[in-house]
Length: 217
Image (cartoon, rainbow, N blue to C red):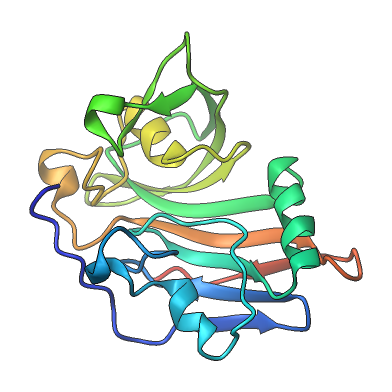
């Protein structure tokens, strides 16, 4: 990854919803959620949003290479409320992905604990002694003619790189993954992982709301 050059997409982020408490956005692939280290990685989603929403506050993140639904808070109350929902697993996140090979059976669950692979950061890996619990449900949508599989992924926990490592451990890495895919599985223009929908309770009304963003691949 030493030859990585950060080249975020130029287009403005798509606003899915905005009110007095929350801001929901469709993050494009290739754009950092928050600033990275160094001036060359200052451009990010929250910085772009702060022009129109100077009060914007971070709640959670999506990986650089992942696209899809992200929620931001517009008040400290909303940030605390939403943060608690994520910590207590009260939100429901659904992702779409394309995987290498034909995944069988049609549905299942990966239950493998994860922890950072310190010598190879930012990679994560399975460790049954020191890893933190991580569970992902999957459901096959269809097997493609090119030998790949389109799936819906439902993480029950929120570990770093969880979906990417769990799919790799199944023997079906996510296409285009620069960290966990190898060979032909890596030779795609982007990571084929998209946060399709997010269900949460509104910090003010307490009403359940679901936000979705169309899959770009």
